[in-house]
Image 1 (cartoon, rainbow, N blue to C red):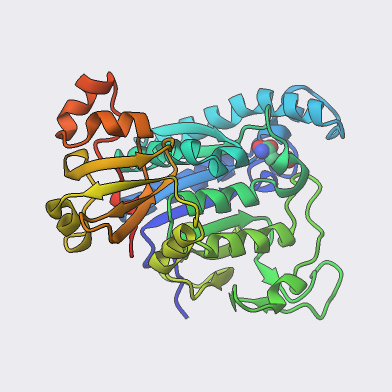
Image 2: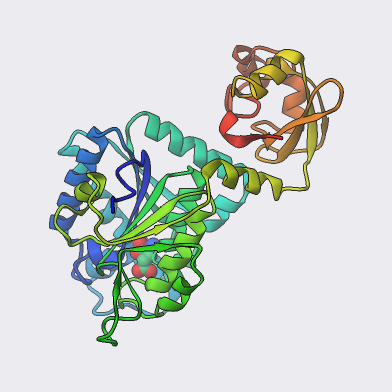
Length: 372
Ligand code: GLU
């Protein structure tokens, strides 16, 4: 069996609190150094990497000299604000040794469900990846508490996987992977190196118990794998303590648990857009644009759009129809209805003159579009 990471190009790597903070003793710089070195090797192999890292709260607790993790959410949020400084500093330092730039993104679940912010986060991340920067994402704990309460960023990592349509989500933790039951309680527990996300048994296999430092037990990891599969991504759960784990996985060695999915990326995106039965507008395309979209796999540019009807905002789903009114595609539009009306029929280079700014040169990017 070969690791699914070998073929993957775009990868989200999630690093849990207990791993980066050496079981609550402040940041474990040795682990961070090792991980950065491995990620640098993966990047040399032309892989695109996005890091989702927890550890802010654990680091904050250490910096504030608190003896134990408080229960009050507001204190945890304050600790996260303090600790995030250390976390990001440590990553920046480690990656700089490999001449890699890092970027910090603090996101909430709402950012990824709001259509406009979803598009913004997506273009920021893809732009960073195109410049070979390593984005380091954490939940914006000072305004949101989802991951503090439940996930230790497992869900956030899956949402980011969906957002950028990554090929694989790697969840690095302090456990070897997934067992048939909790190995700390059951000596009969068997290790699973491969399981399908479509297998209904996998959720039952996951106990609720996690470490005390972060929130995420195996259950949240399995839910994350299911969510990642919605955009056609496979998941690997592996121990971040295994020597050279990421490089070995990228070389094809099957370490940890691979949770594969049958969902194809394209099918997943079609399904996602098909779920948006409610479309907010209709753009009529000229013949050139219809051909560019349907035959050449191109984006829709303002120059190819003849008319626009409906009231929509950036990030909402609109229909694209030909001059006979036949629906040819559906996609997330980059400009509001008012803006679209102003830039119809114009070359993209004119957008800034007319609107005073450019969100994107395309009206609908091909990555946000499905043909019907
Ligand atoms: N985002 C949080 C962090 O960075 C989640 C982990 C936790 O609840 O400890 O620390």
